[in-house]
Image 1 (tube, one colour):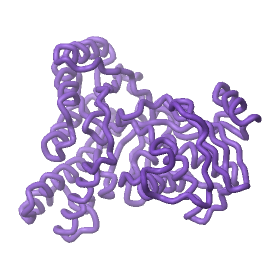
Image 2 (tube, rainbow, N blue to C red; image 1 turned 135 degrees about the vertical axis):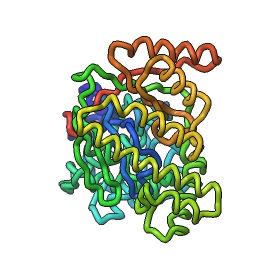
Image 3 (tube, rainbow, N blue to C red; image 1 turned 90 degrees about the vertical axis):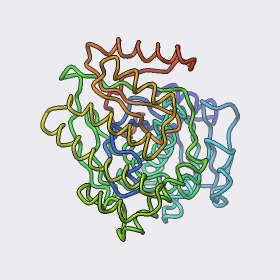
Image 4 (cartoon, rainbow, N blue to C red; image 1 turned 180 degrees about the vertical axis):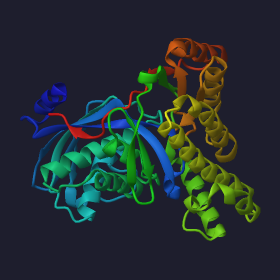
Length: 384
């Protein structure tokens, strides 16, 4: 963290007012349920976006990333407007969008100098964008004395991504980054943002959660995510409910019988069944039986692959190879079309499973995947 502060000083000529960090996340189960007002179960990763920030009150926003080639992006706070992919056509849209969203919400943010550095893999489905948004929102909340809560920060960050960047994401990623707790998974009701920290110390029971980064980059702004969101909303309208969260799993056969569009039927089946898988996972964790979660992961992957159709050959291979090598369960995580999978394994067999996945990718001619353990970590916080 001190390195980021030193880099800030070299860029801007003086030290920052503070340094903040916000993590990426991996979602254990509950995918594409958040924008349907459903349930999710993410956990924060050790990988973080770090921001060194100083307040300024002259209407100028200066942004710099240590991870992207290019100099300082200088923007007029009063002139920030959504559209066009944001300033610089890329990463700068996320922190700039947060400033815009704060001002839209009535918070008197007059500018800032920001230097960012991130260890969250980009394009891996691990919420690198949410980490950038949340760390910026937290820093500005503290520097401007806004006193925003974790859920309020998440709402601002989501609005920045929805309205400014133009990605119609749900709230899960931002809530996980803002509110997660070390050693826990976050059981979140996305309707009202109520949440519960669920103990998730796998190491204590001889288990490990691996993340397999397929190295296949996804871009959720390309329309596929938006199309599925629109399909889910169409299903809710056809069923006469506010959101698909209001369809219970016992009602699913009747609901599917009332839908005529086959694509909408598939989307509805996935969302309703995945909400149920979250509930069953929570029950197993509360009962102290995390090993029994494995089959639910496999079931969830099949639903994402066959009903939602957001998987890809690399994700399918990662799941199949891991399970064949003795993993308790595995599934794709995140928005799909690439990105990452999660694999629940006995700690004693983790290396064998990782070796099997790497071998399967090599035989298929795919790029070598990245593998690391997902250790439930702390949410956004000040670090300097």
